[in-house]
Length: 151
Ligand code: SME
Image (cartoon, rainbow, N blue to C red; front, top):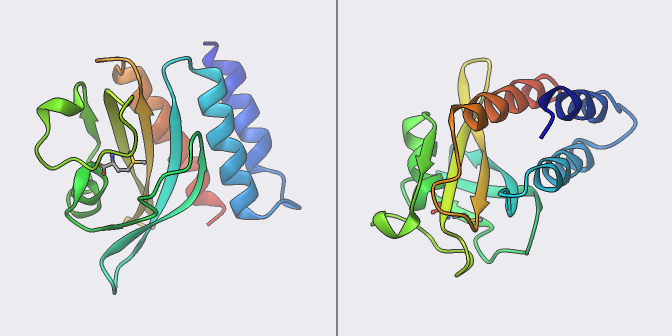
């Protein structure tokens, strides 16, 4: 993958002010998924801090039943509480994991901060074992920083 081109494309999407925020986030998910052969599902969840739940706002890949996730449940729910990147090389090694699809072998969840508050997250599932590196963390952190600017 050519990161420079990918970032330019995401920049372009972010700046399409005539598109709704949901449309821009959906396009970002699609772009990330289509550009990385080991990104098989990509989605943004956002937090309801009163209800302590995460809500799926935009995604690319097969639809999931897990559109609402309580804080603390699964990898996503743990990131809602901890506010730190969570890289899972092998989902079978996790006790607190919500399976969306039997083909998923690994997952990365990156919190999204707005004004220092953990308001959501970017979640990527992979059908490949142990596929993620620091490069993925930096890329997805960068995406979240850009998305935060339009929220
Ligand atoms: N696997 C996640 C749930 C969300 S799906 O991957 C789309 C988790 O354990 O939180």
